[in-house]
Image (cartoon, rainbow, N blue to C red; front, side, top):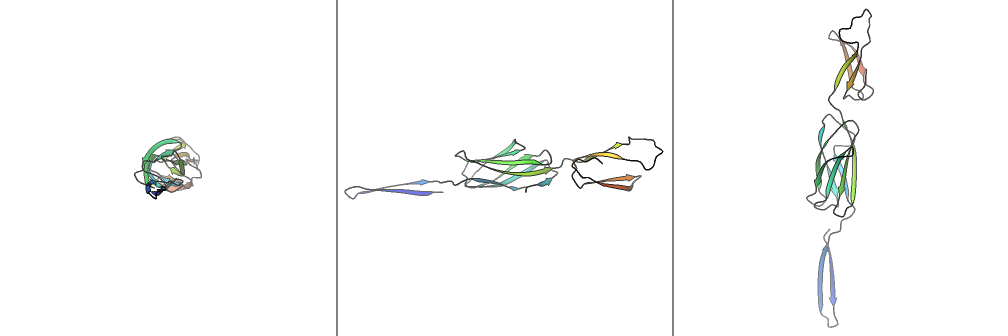
Length: 174
């Protein structure tokens, strides 16, 4: 950056004239997502992301996408500037992508995965409420939402813990 180029002219009489210009060379650009880390787990739907750029100029732009949908952008204010933006997550395995475009139309990309776990819920699907039976023990089944692998369902009978079930898939049934 700020390379100085000087030319000198000497004529047949030995007179000299000089001229100098400055040329700003921008090497290959790059962009990085530094926060959050790749494969980050969160229960926050609207998060801040941030990162760095290299060999960028003033007014180059970082565009931020989630699962291919535009979320935010940041116009750089200084050379090789850091950037920040906000995204809205939709679920587990969200792809957060940043695209840097410089004044020459060159592009650089970076991608991370963020796992958003929506608010949790649980429901008993069998037996129905106020079910009458003369069988013991009974089978109890249900559903979950917003849950992850390794989360636990605790089944109580009259307030006393009876059974624990460890979920083996996302939004698992039990």
